[in-house]
Image (tube, rainbow, N blue to C red; front, top):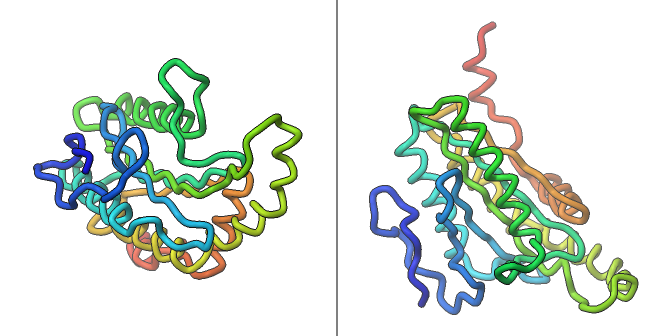
Length: 214
């Protein structure tokens, strides 16, 4: 079992490490001072690789809310697309989707720090991983995976992911209507999100309407 970085305030980590974790880093990455990231991965049939990954993300959001002024956080949930997955680039190699996601989070975290230097709004990234890259080889060769990955994207956007997204939204908004959730899908990741939303993602919070001035 891999040890986790110091992601939670206060420690210790409320959820043990994910058994059999194979990635270079644990399912939470808290090395940056500008943001923290959680990975939630899904099988081809749309089921979760390990439910503990979602539990860790939700615990991370809660922890960031505890240290934030007024409990306000920004949660950025991203679903990658075709020809990508949750792999991380080797040191010195060309950045992959995971690293590009980190760059985007870093920019968001930097702007949050500029907006309120003493108490910046915490930024939590949620990377939804699936097998968008099923073939290796020259670029033209991988195009034959288009239809299989398109159909897989439909399954990834099933009820399990819908429940996960709803849990992320609910946990982010709990106790603070000033918090925000950003949902982004790239390529077939947008298709994944479309199907998840159709299955019942709660995008509209009635509490915001009731709190708004008439």
